[in-house]
Image (cartoon, rainbow, N blue to C red; front, side):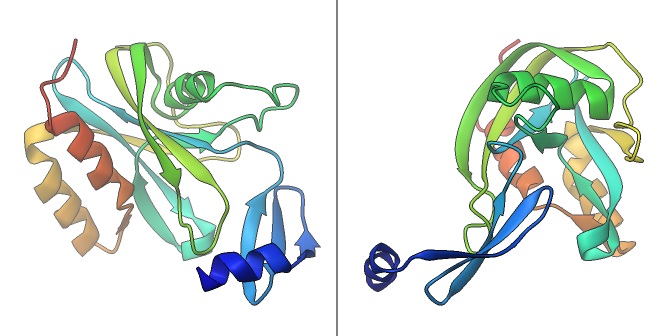
Length: 185
């Protein structure tokens, strides 16, 4: 409650504005706000062979390779500022993995990291997947796609972590949603 009261009485100061992010100070708190986009779409996709689609890439901020769910910014494409979260999820799934979804459903929305950024993410479950492209990301990305059997995913992630690859915890949130109830096909 004290933080809410402080925020109501404090003006925001933009410490720096870049092409994609703004650093904002509100009272004693500093956080990042996304400039070109309205949030992020994260996709948990499982193929008809019960394989989970994961992506691996080098992430400059953490100076390491990471394993993540396919994801991307909503509305960051030139000329598509009003892109829907579903359209972004479909676009990112295809760009990063080469798979398209016959059906896609939002399962939850929340903060990506509420202590550091204003960004909110929507997690989608993708069904009826089919190969529709090569994947691997766009020009500046170097994404490796992994198709891991659902029954082997936890030991696979543990083995990757032992090699020094960072595992995004949102993968486990995605697994919760696809394993808590039978998959709809």
